[in-house]
Length: 93
Image (cartoon, helix red, strand yellow):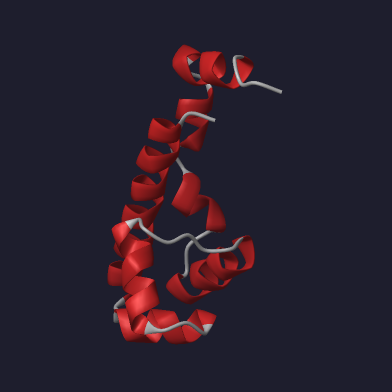
């Protein structure tokens, strides 16, 4: 998949995580505690330089009282763009 797309999506998801955590009134340290990582690691997640597993996202969604789809809500918009489809179609096999 297109590296630019991945970088942009990682940042968008990181922003959604930060927004949800803030709305839930939790510190980064408390959010990190929910998924068993350090506050530094969680900070990197919110900066978009580290990813979380699906299970970690599910746990955060429960802790932030949002559906897990909240973190991905714009993914459908991107999947329908022709540039993304073209980059997927032209991947070497």
